[in-house]
Length: 112
Length: 112
DNA sequence: ACTTATTGTCTACAAAGCAGACACACCTCT
DNA sequence: AGAGGTGTGTCTGCTTTGTAGACAATAAGT
Image 1 (spheres, rainbow over the protein chains, first blue to last red):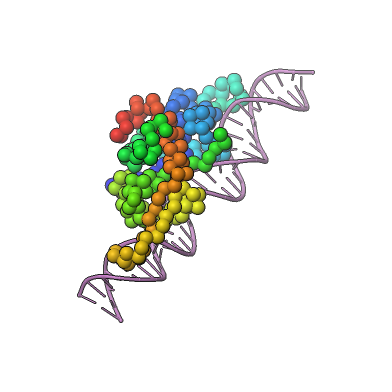
Image 2: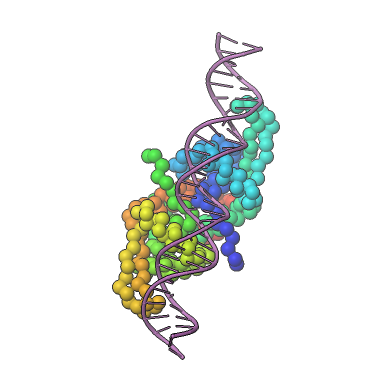
């Protein structure tokens, strides 16, 4: 097996946040998920550029919602992780879990 | 808590590989660990530049070994993760574990 | 001596991460 | 109906990470 390019650290979290919020994954909710769950500040620039790259790689897709016009009035983009995205996520997790194995002495139990 | 800068994806794996191989963590063994456990190809350039950055951030330290002169004849650098490095690793793991929570339906059980 | 093996350094570039300014449509207020 | 406010998303430009591959130095084997 040659090597499939790995997900960046932030890319991985973005994909995970989409899965967590599905089917309500829009820019702002993804951002909120990251800030609450991962305790990480996210600027719009950082988020959307990552989202763009992920789409280009086929790991996510999105569709424009009806112009519900209820919040800003703007149609929102609903994001969704593709099958390839889920596979990439699995590969990353597998690698990390293997590397963590046996290190509880240093890292403590899972809940950190 | 403001936000501490996160570890890059590769940086995290390098640190973990050092912990796994300790106290025999030298360039080549770290590389081997990454290739076998994470199934990831590593070039020397990639590895050493990451190692250098990690040192600059205080997440690892190293010492030159006695010129044992047995393998290339060159003294080797033995790497060690610092306390700050371990803390960074814990923070990354905690964030990821929280984000994975409840997604078994998509990602399958831990062993991938 | 010349070749090969082992470890590490250097240079130069590509990809990912990031902040903040900008745009725009709708809403509310007056 | 014009002014200001709010909730999306876009764009530009820069910094940090990730990557490959050529190069250097030293010792061993021939």
